[in-house]
Image (tube, rainbow over all chains, first blue to last red; front, side):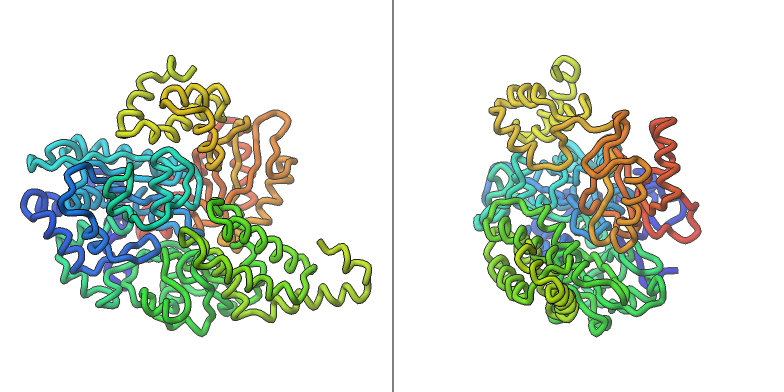
Length: 435
Length: 179
């Protein structure tokens, strides 16, 4: 039995649970919708979500109810809800499971969110590669529409919500909410300059809320069991509820584990994920997806909530925990992530577009033992000139692996460079043809 | 022409959005499904359907990695090379696939059956190493599994090793399903 009560993964953890409408209804599914639509005022739903303390599960951790509250109250035209299912952060694979194994849980959340914000159209922006997931969602939407949970006049309450699945096409940046909106409008996924924020100028320039899959999947539970119940789980008052943490890397049992926020990394790695694969000690871990700075074994007792991880110098991000054992080259690991960011930079802002290329080239050179000591300063200088100087948070994310590995494992960079210098002493003519 | 064959689908797709251009990526998928890649003729036709200029379509297509501008083999093998798969041995696995197929990433086998690509994270880090072949995911790969998949694809065009609805780890007491 799991040590902690499961909320989001509860249904799918029952043997034989198929994720069909009948299975979902048998576990009490769509009861939150029945109890809320036409019975609780939309503004009260927003208040309940705000009181629950629910924060976005996509990475930024912005309070969901507060985000909804930014929508203009007196605006008469259409509003939109976009479900961010563009799960692309390396190390993260929870939304895929939530969508493919229990699609109605998330759909119920979508309809509840639409009701709260007054949206009649919702688009699920799912990453293009997840063909199976999009088929499962389309089938689930069909079931829900036939049962009267989606469509016109839902359950006779006069609420209209239509939901469509929109497949992205393989661009990491489209997980950034304004890039997602651009992509949904049929354009290149380039993030927009904010303000204005999507709450006032979102999809088609209309008031829009973008929420992550896991965020939305929490809503039926909050509305059924109450904001107070949710607010007491985890690390109140600022990190409430559970998180589905995705554990990958050198552990015995990688996978998705739902635990209350505030458990330690040690518990997650050694109790849930079974400890290290080869029983070697941990050398490093990434606490919240590729965008989060690396941490060391000294941080294993940090509590997994937004504030504690931030205080430790990283971020809880998307919940992707990647563990590396002793013996892993940190320069190599940082280069692998840098290759990812170089590939995925959308090209809109010069510091990120050009900087990611410079960073990856310098890192490749060091890894190939052709680096020079001044490269380390070049790397840090580049990082400083990218972070905070771009339209979106991608710039901050791409420098995280290099900055953090240089902070904790600078000696590994230095020793690779020393090897390069030693080779130069033997072959001085090689110095001029390093590039 | 897409219009003659898919008029109903096209109308339905366009009807989902208040602004026509939103139908662009879904229609490009339709074109890719038809020809295996997005042809110039398809881009021109879609531009006309959505009242866009061909460059507006082209600039969008070139942004997205899932949309192919060149023909690919019958089976497009896309091996994840991001850090999390690399920690689980994807480099060795890629080497194995390269040897088995006799091609490097970016190349196709002479018989046109396989195209090999390396791709970035596909959200299967808990079941690494992994690859996507056409629409399907294949996870927790080993050399033996790759051999079986390649054999299955050659003989029947599909493989029962492909992933079903994702859950890992599987619930205790549940029927164990491979992959």
